[in-house]
Length: 365
Image 1: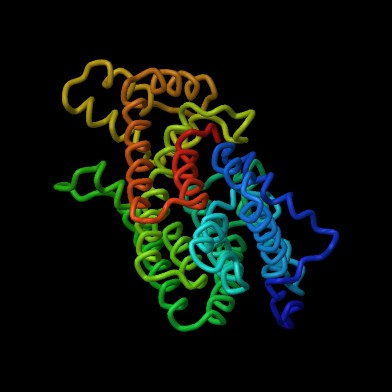
Image 2 (image 1 turned 30 degrees about the vertical axis):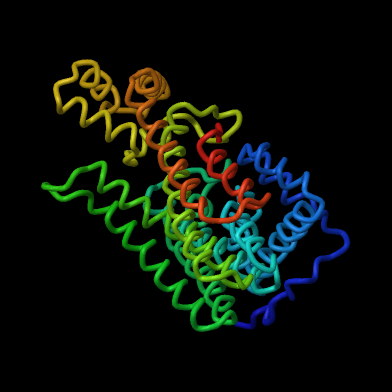
């Protein structure tokens, strides 16, 4: 099979027809980041640099997954064209501003982390039997499980080609990150041991599944921008904590979010039996003798195939104190991410990173 894209688009090339503000506006809207993007936009150098870099990454993503085989091309494009928050490329670019900025290697690293993320989504959706992703039917719903899994493999192969061009250290970072991603998924699939705290097990799972790749995003951005090792280490710690906060916020949004904004029916995770922090906290409270938690848990554990049953369970869980407790936990992780930035000198970039950590939990989608 001949690849229609044997070489990658140079990081500095973007067609004149590509709107440079499109990627920034899309991310700002989907992530609800007015504070962080306001800080960026007000800076006459940082604003254009981030906006241009995001647009170039968006273009290179499409180039990276292009393929001469029609099925491979269609399946690979499926999630890229469905959109997404692009928080990993954004963090890579922001981290690079702690050094020389978004040089070509930084942009290529941003494409690598987003492709890796996309590859895992194809596999996750098969394992979870998820019908929708980003408001569109999942790949396995369109083409079947086998094709969806192979599409994820193909996208990861493309990410591997790109990261190999960045050198052995980048390959090692990518390999270790992917190992953590897989181990996190494995731990989620198997579940906690009998003697293991379920909440702590869950935090370990999402640190692997979500935190690891977001940490790598910041790490590669700072590293390829020539920042010192101390700065790179800060971005790893910051990224891991932001990643956990992001996933915990997603858990609560599944209960409190609005379908009109997120494209995802509230309670989707409940219906699919996906473990989330509010439910884990609910189970702990019920096991400790909390009668109200036991009543809500009975609704959560019931048959949720009907929309009426699901809506009733969501409403009960939303009103229970464990949901607010989960929000508090997410904010604690976001605060810990902000604390990791303290050694950095004051700058617009530092303020934007801090605002970014706040925004991942202060959102509705």
